[in-house]
Image (cartoon, rainbow, N blue to C red; front, side, top):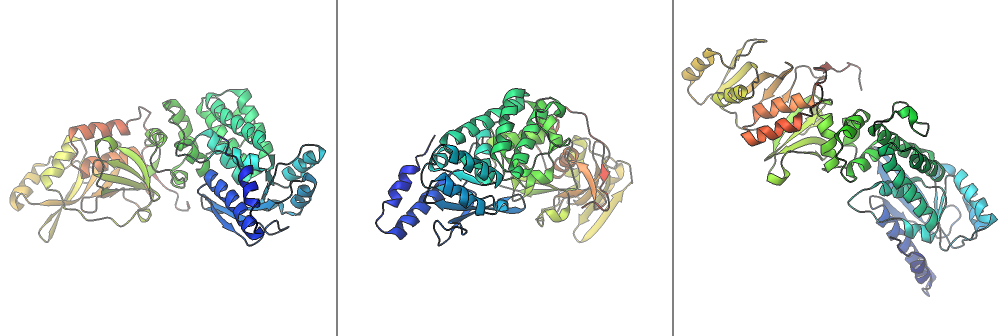
Length: 473
């Protein structure tokens, strides 16, 4: 839907006080830019129509980086004068120029187009600014195209050019997901022409990932991309917040192009596509520690969902969230919980066939250990004797459990944390989560089945565990 901006600018300029007229024009442009890109921060300067000093400074974050784009308002829409101004700007700043009236057609406009493309500058006239779609909660491929214009568009764009770009890219991303050549090539052509290299590289990488997700070889992709393409946080954020993609084969092909670090840099919290990605990734991605935190407010309709909470990846269940991380220092300080009774721990281990090779128990102010390295002690009759001698109130502080592929996990029932021995040892999420939750929590039959379904992607099991390289950053 086009939002008329030119009439608002004309109305603002009609104010009898020139200073008020300038501020009102800045109001119009600033408000419209924030409608389109609300995550940005826009600061005004005290200047207007200045040769070098921008009227507005637009900044946003892209992963760990802070990005800025200087916005220049121009009272004249003469393409000759605009071309002279654009040649004075620094190419690296990727300026955004907003003339306050429509730029006329003709040879001078064609010259301005060439200069603006070469200088990585976007000349966005009022009709083009009005044609950019306002941000909505549901993210689509068209939203990616709109963001690309704001972040790194170049050349001249009025309403017709903006709409053509949005349509081409929107259709092209969907075509790439289906492995169709011609609309994908058309979209890539628009992207390379209309955006600066950083933005076009990001968008082509996303489309290449979609292409691979369709099942087609990257060698058939109608553009040059790195042989090992991977999604950055911006492209992954768009993919995960887009309408749900139910094709499980697509996510199995996408998963190798994504890692947990990139996922945590996105602005995603909980989306249907995040659930789809994690169903595939849970068997492959590896972590060092799982920490279970009590969390109220999870009803039956919201149980067992993946989420990202303040930079931490977690699985939300009934009354808890289980967070996963590559290092203990990546998580918050754990709370303390009451130690379960020995009988409860043995019952959980037996119910889910989890071997326990050691158990540390607490009785008043005394700690008692019972272990047999490599052997399951869960059903040892000696434990019955210990329970009888100490009474029924003996609690379990810690146990060493074996995952289905016999990876040892130290499970602490007081802090509700679990991790393998060795500070840098990593375990597949499915095994780390499955063993931790089944042993540390008292799951009922329904939740146990839901957990089984969530961790079973019907894919081949990955390699067992690994020790990260000592010098890995």
